[in-house]
Image (cartoon, rainbow, N blue to C red; front, side, top):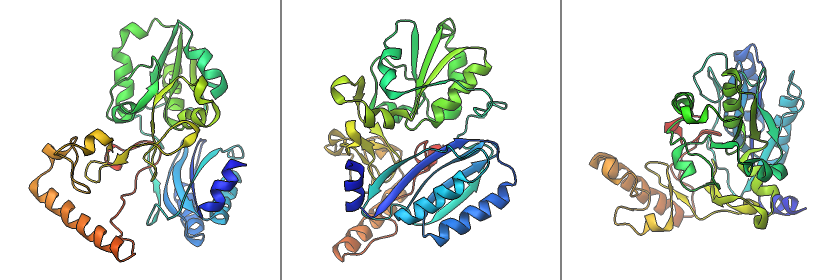
Length: 325
C-alpha cells in the first residue's frame, strides 16, 4: 500500500478528525483527553463541545492509535472517521484540549448535524451531482482557501469566517428557488454543518461531499477530476493537489495566508516577515519583531536546532488561528 510506504519513511502521524455527537460532562472529557494525549506525547488541538469533537493531533503510530481507540469507545463514536498525513518532525509544540460552544463556529442556535443533516455523496459520485443543471454548488470555505482552488462552477460566498455563511445565504435570494444544493469543504465538517442549516431552513435536497475535498483528491483520478487548483490544508503542507501530493504554496508567517511563487517575487515579500497580502497592514514594530524572530530561526537552523517559533500552530479544520474554526 502506498500509504504504508509513506508512513514507514515519516515517523510522525498527523490525524485530522471530527464527529457530531452529543457530549456531556465536558470538563471530565477534557481531563481524560489531556491525560491520554500527554501520556502518549501527542501534540495539537482538540475542540470539544456539546455537539461533538473536532481536531488535529500528531504523534507516533502507537500514540495516534491509542487516542483513536479511546474516542471510538465513547458513546456514539464507534464510527468516527479520521484522515492521516505524515511528517518527519512534530508540527505542534504542545497539546491543547479546548471546550467551546461549537466545534465549528456558525453561531446559529439549533443547528445540529447529529439531528438533521444533508445527504452524504461519495467522491466517486460527486462529479455527476455537480454536473446537473439544477444544482447550486457552494464552497463553504473561507475566501483565502477558495482563492487557491475550488470545483469547476462552484459559488464562492467570499466569507472571511464560517460564521458569516448563514447571513450570506440569507441574502442570496436567487438561490432560494433552487431544488438541489451541493456543498463541500476541506474535510467535511463545515459543509456538514452548512447542510444542517439549510435543512432547518426548509430545503430538502441538500448534499455534501463525504470526506471533503481531501477524500475527493485522494480517490478520484486526476484525469476525471473537476477540481481546479490546489487545496489549502491545516498542517505543514499548506496545500495539496491530486493524490494528496504537496502543493506549491507556502504560508506567510505574519498573516498565515497562502503565498504563491508570484507573491514571493513581489517587493513586499520578505521571508518570515511579510507578503503582498499583509505588508501594508503591518506596523513597523510588528515587522521588526518578525525580522528578529526570522533571524533567530535562521541561526537555529544553521546550528541544526529547532527554533520554537519556527512554525505557528493552526486551528483544526477551519483556518489560521485568527480566523477561528
